Amino acid sequence: MNDHPIEAKEGMTDMRLPGLKGRKVVITAGAGGIGFAIARQLYAQGARVAICDVDADALKRASDALGGCIAEQADVSDDAAVEAFFDKVRAGLGGLDALVNNAGIAGPTGHLEDLTPDEWRRCVDICLTGQFLCARQAIPMIKASGGGALVNMGSAAAKHGYAYRTPYSAAKFGVIGLTQSLAKELGPDNIRVNAILPGIVEGPRMDGVIQARAEATGVSFEAMREEYLKNVSLRRMVSPDDVATTVAFLISDLGANLSGQSLAVDGNVETL
Image 1 (cartoon, rainbow, N blue to C red):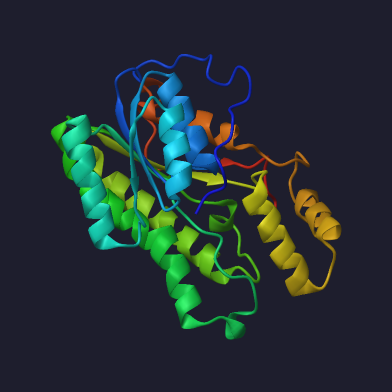
Image 2 (cartoon, rainbow, N blue to C red; image 1 turned 60 degrees about the vertical axis):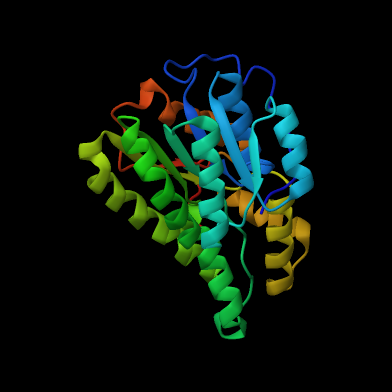
């Protein structure tokens, strides 16, 4: 689900945000890529973090970098694995203030009629159903803490139709519906729910997406990469740390009155 752990950009963890110290936060798929950047940012701010991932080796490296935090191997589409992970969180952290529903996969690339039902289900199960499974475990704990925050990872594909990536786009549109519905449902419990919509995030996973789309449309990797950047107003990719700082803001006290929002961190993707 993730790339290997990354280092945060210099200075990215120097900004102290009010309310994060001691806050108990779960980050799914937190051992690499965007998830690790989020976990690292929150840990540097003094939060107590717990992560899960499917990559056991990456989990060990990430936990070491995060002060030996709770780090469990779990597939978010597996009901039993999710429940077991949150049991560990409950025992280890003694409560929960925030959930970052970060886990996701790129899903298949190709014409819809060429995709298999198993490919469709796997993408939707991880990118959307996994958020439901984690939220249903986290919400009672956050309510018991007196309130807090959920941050659901969407995508620029939740704003635009995405040819040849239909399962992924459909799942991410679903994340917006989940976010807005839960914001209404949980607001009276002092729980804020927002979505982050990353754009073209630099790293191996994005390189794989570009390569797959290049192959599906019969052009070179370089030509497809250029095509992607032409559709971004700022003409550049975003970094995992760009996403991480936005998540930290939403969980902090500075985001106390933000809920039901879908915040694009994408350099203004105009189309996909």
